[in-house]
Length: 79
Image (cartoon, rainbow, N blue to C red; front, side):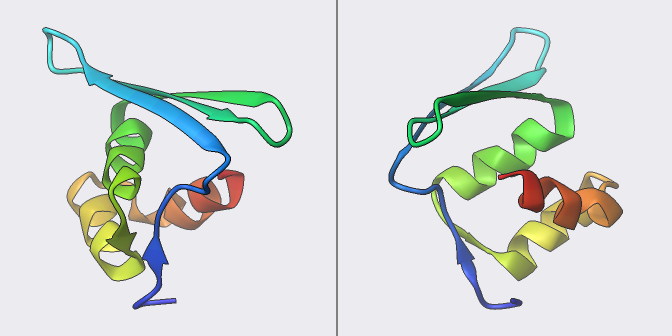
């Protein structure tokens, strides 16, 4: 999975934004099963990287920088 390119599925819509206090928040809508996911902090940072396409290794490196690498696979399983 190291070189796998991760990007949003075509049936998803999303919005990520940063507050004035530099907090990151995202909302993801899955139009296939009509569910919504709300993310903040590190999970929103990771999702923001996925939005434009990122390799698993680069995402893992970002997760290390954010000190959440151990939870990365659990987060990806939710997506």
